[in-house]
Length: 146
Image (tube, rainbow, N blue to C red; front, side):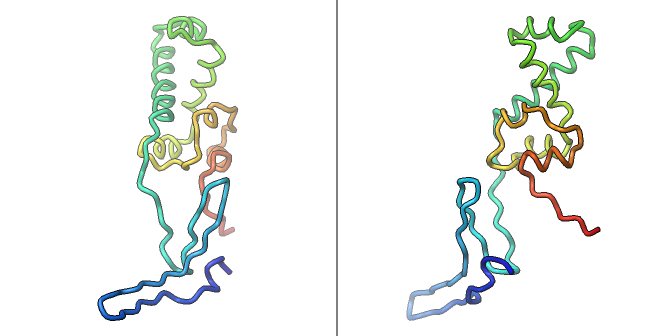
């Protein structure tokens, strides 16, 4: 039973020149954010895509740095870190972003990442299994039918 299942059905009434539309909803608070729960069977609302430039820059930087290392332009991460004027630890954490699930990378590129996702979340040590990455980073995962 969903939170909105006990509410009355949608209805429209017209009194003279005024049209009133009643749509049953429930307001929930999750992770400090308000969420609107619509009636059963309604299409869930989805916000417009919002490309987070900080997330995107981190992903681009990771792939650029990987290319510089793989091409042989820099012989090791320490040399690259010195050239980029960043510390070795930061460079290593950013390089790990190249191991993110392609779905996560695509979602960030098109602006469909969870609204709470931040660069620091990506720079944490994440599991290599893509499904686990998505779960830890706040993606809604389909429930298994098995």
